[in-house]
Amino acid sequence: ALRKDRFHLIQAAPVAGSIGAEARELITSAEDIFVFDQSGRKLIDGPAGMWCINVGHRNQALADTLRDQAMSLTYSTPWYTSNAPAEKLAQMLAERAPGDLNHVFLTTGGSSAVETAIRLVQFYNNVRGQPQKKLLVSRQGSYHGSTYLTASLNGRPRDHDWMDGASELVRKLTCPNPFHRPANLSVEAFEDFLVDEFRALIAHEGAGRIAAFVAEPIQASGGVLMSPPNYLKRMRALCAENDILLIADEVVTAFGRLGHIFASEDVFGIQPDMITFAKGVTSGYFPLGGVMVSERLFAELRRSNHPNANFVHGLTYSSHPIGCAVAIRNIELLEDGLLEHAREIGPYFQEQLRTLEELPLVGEVRGAGLMAGIECVADAKAENPLDLDLTVGKRIDFHCQENGLLVRPLINMCVMSPPLTINRSQVDMMTDALRKGIEATAQDLIRERL
Ligand code: PMP
Image (cartoon, rainbow, N blue to C red; front, side, top):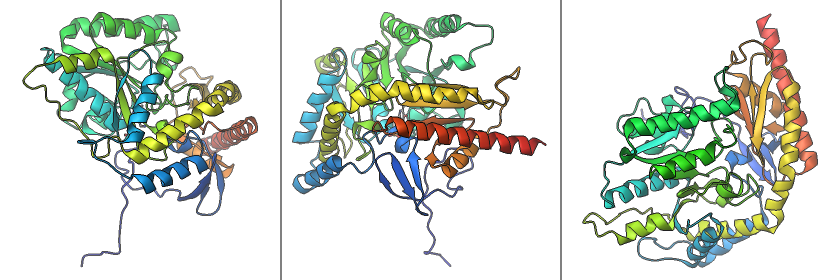
């Protein structure tokens, strides 16, 4: 008989074969940097939800804004109308974005933002008579989303190697993380290698076939992978020389995580042709994302009298008034001291977490601002430091939870990106819980090997 008393909520499936297989912690409430689970445990929200609760949980101003907007205008169609919060948000974003990124298309999250950016790029090349300029370049270790196309851009082959179609448009460059560079290369030589690899790809495919380079300024979900110092600037220059658009995927790095509204220019000194964002734009209080588009690119689209110049692209929830109202209030909160606080506490957070490098299990602690990755190795002093236990991230998470901290496990790493409201003593608590969690994990591993 058909059982209707069973249900299954399918949630993110990080590992093949694990769809819905794992029991999850049931989070029942939250307050600022803390979450409370079903059994009443209070845990520091180490990953801020998923790099998103930037102003902290249960923020009264954002909750009030949500309610007030729902009571005045809940929805207006972006196909035929506009609404005041969307107009105001667009203006605020344009004022804060680098260069001439004055145009914004609002979406429902990060994947739809990247997807929108790519459609715009392909359309742009189509209307200017270069329909063969379609290839997309991304990198190993990247994450750009879970839709068909964005998953194809992702750095992990298992995200897409079983899918046809979109992947054929994508070329992957080497992950720019110096920690995993070939042993014989200095960081400077590794940077040269990465730039030369892109140059060789352009020569091989032909600049006339490469449409865009999509890159997170710091590869977040890949494990907070930082690139060599001048890499982004040099890649930016190569893009410009070859008429390749640079899309900075700032879904994680924007809205305060690195102490600025957008990080591309303020932190990395580059002006992309497009910036995608989501997450922190509403601090996770409403699903919203978007793509900033340059004046130069948009002017081309406008000028076009191409017969197929009718770019049909709209999402029911683009420019959602509640999301936009929340984003406006969120940006005000960020600019009312929180960005400054993030810039002040970021170096302390980095410095404290770096002390974990003295633990034998820790190979590297890296990051910037309020994002950090702790990468474990079997033994940091061993000859081949990459011989590691792939369950180590989960084990650390388990032991950290015993010590009052939720972390985001990533195979052999854990990733930290707390709400920007975190203070010094809470950073100390976090570091202490991590130390204990990593030490307990090391003990487990030693015991199991005996
Ligand atoms: N780009 C980046 C850099 C991301 O980190 C993510 C989400 N982790 C996405 C895109 C996709 O965003 P969403 O999950 O909101 O679709």
